[in-house]
Image (cartoon, rainbow, N blue to C red; front, side, top):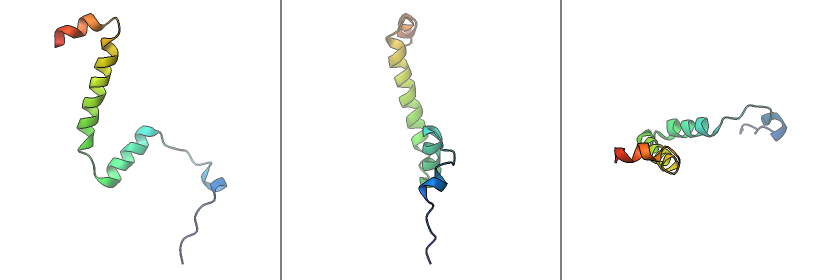
Length: 64
C-alpha cells in the first residue's frame, strides 16, 4: 500500500531551506560536485563586473 502524502496544512509549518541549501541538496543527491568550481568562477566574474562599475574600478583595472 502506498504511503499517504502529507497534507499542505501539515507540511506548511516545517522550515524551508533557502536557495543555497536547496542547491546543496541537489548537488549531493545528483552527485554533481563538478559544478562547484564553475559556480565559484561565475560568482567571481559577477563580483568583478559589479565592482568594475563602482568607485573601486581604478583599483581593479591594474589586475588585468
